[in-house]
Length: 243
Image 1: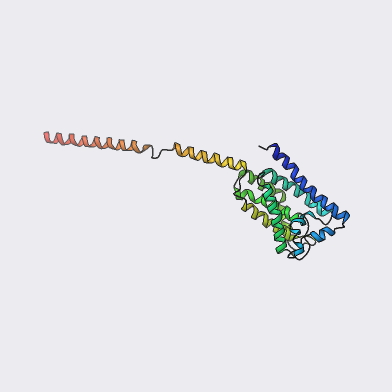
Image 2: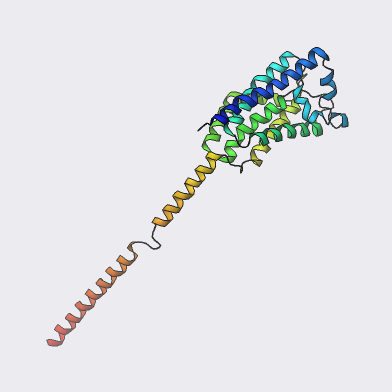
C-alpha cells in the first residue's frame, strides 16, 4: 500500500531534482551564456573535468536539449521513488555518479553535458531490476519501461552529431550493473512476501509426516498375510498327518 510519506516523496523529489536542473540551465543560459556548462561540463580524463562527474547532468545546450531530457527524467525518477521507496536515494546517487565516472574514464575528448546519461541509467535499472530480483511488481515495472522507453536504445549508436552517445551507452551499462548490484536489497513488500513463503513452507513441512503414512499399515497387512498363510500351511500339514 502506498503511504502518504511515499506519495509525498514521489511528487517532491522528482519535481525538486528537475527544478534544480531547470534553475541551473536558466542561470547558465541567460546570465552566463553557457560558460558554466563549458567549464563545469564533463571533460574526460582531465582534472578540470572531475567536477563534471557530478555537475554535468545539470547543464544543457539549449531549450530543446533540456525539454527532451526533462520528461523522461521526471517519469523515470518518479517510478524509481514509487517502486523502490527504501532504495531510491542510494540507487539514484550510484547511477548518477557511476555514469559520470564511466564517461570521464571512457568518453571522447569533448565536453559532455546533459542528464541523458542519468536517464538511460534509470531506464536500464528499472528495466532489468525486475528480472534480477524475480519480483512480480518489479517485473511489471520492467515491462512498462521497456514498452515506453525501449526505443531509446538507438541513442547508444555512435556517429550522431551533437549527441553524447557514450553517456547513453555508459548510462545503460551503469543501470544494468546497478540493477544487478542491488538485486538483494529488498523492499518492504518483498520482505513480507518472502516471510509468507517461508512460513507456508515451514507449515507444509510440519504437516507432512516423517514417514509414508502407509508404511505402518503396509507392515501390518504384510504381517496379517504372513500369519494367514502360516496358519493355512499348518492346517494343511495337520490334515495330511491325520490321513
